[in-house]
Image 1 (cartoon, one colour):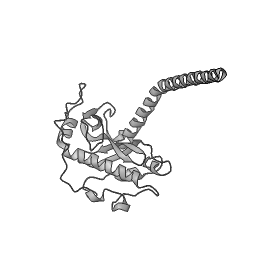
Image 2 (cartoon, one colour):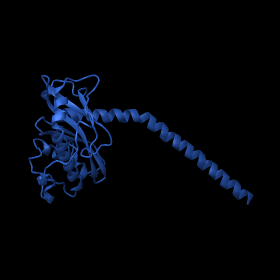
Image 3 (tube, helix red, strand yellow):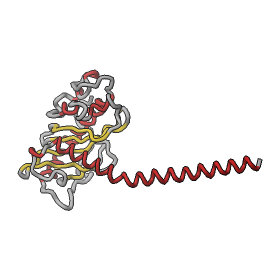
Image 4 (cartoon, one colour):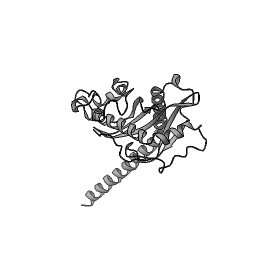
Length: 233
């Protein structure tokens, strides 16, 4: 019995040491890679911004010309969001807002949606997702041009009920073997346009102001998230 207890104690001690070493290794790895991951994410975001509104279409520093907009269930964000403003000769030519499609097949899909002052989509890019490789990952531009089908669209083009995949009566293509992913992205883009239209006057007033080092003065009270008086899909 004594020998068995000693064996159990040795095993427990060994497992404890292994757990400490493993946990320490994971913590050190996370600490060493967190900055690199953040840098890569920022680089990917910047690349997407300039794909939506290329440098030839604006002459300001897009990465520094920003507005802070309150959170909205239409954008599916937990807190205030940073939006980027593109200007040409001092005049705003577009705004790029982050949005989240919460109902992707494998979880959240993070997007950037570029919108012209008249409410037309300038471009959409997916910057983070966990969708199935070979199926849902076709939302990436390196896998297909599907996401570019939003360019030039608006809330009236197509009509609200047509903001869906063709399988469900919409105008947008679905992926072979995958409809949940494109449907989630379509819905997120449409909601971004609704958010912009409902708050267009306030957002454009802020866009028309010169960039301020103190930041914008848009507050939750300035913006509204009441339902739009449009037919929903």
